[in-house]
Length: 362
Image (cartoon, rainbow, N blue to C red; front, side, top):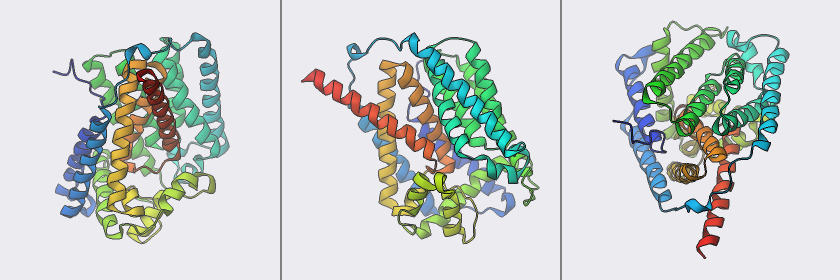
């Protein structure tokens, strides 16, 4: 049934949004920790936002890339350089854990100290280098380095990074190795299992919180809670007037967590809160900013998807990274500087390819 389908086309975001709403529904239906169904307006906002995302993807289909514009294969001379970058990123990740003084996965206090500038650089370099190496060079040795890096980042206690690494590699291999649906399903189950496990261990290890939920309940509760935050957030539409975006772009260097701004504004107390992919733009600038954001995200992913199907290698790796992060954004929202950096790279790539294509046609 899926043999001729492009499973990881940009439209998978719509499927994932629907799946996320169903997960939230489970939490609301069973009233996990007293969660109640959100108001209809929040579902309407999500529906319209999703529609504009789909329109962005649809608009990208007008872009045609000439097959004969493909340049030579990604040269093997870059492989040693990428390998050096990958090893440096792994060393930096290990060094960051050493400086923290323990394993953040098992301590909320250490977890709060783990997101350093060293971590930021190591994650950025690791995600880029491992995906590009796997996209272009078929060496089993790189899978060992992938597992090593994955373990180091998982030990920080942040499930988002672990999920993105696994998801990006999965999308990457889907296009470059043409892995079967069976293997795809197995890896997908592994990703979900690791997400549940890391999230549960990290939450249970927070010394100042006490959770009675089991791992499955917690998994569904997160979806329900995040949707509840978004439902409340609509009442404060445009309240932060750009502070959330500003803190996303600069907060890492000033130790400001954009999600705390969400919690403080929406919930009335200092708490790091996720608000879905639709939340931050709505809180900052309102409904029209949100639908504009969704259209632009759809357009960029759609254009990059077309380019990577033709040009492979670097472009496939970049698409895999951005799509993986956007899938995670469905819960967390676009409040990560590292993802904006990859999106800016994508915009530069799209402009470059459009320029060459227009030059050829003229």
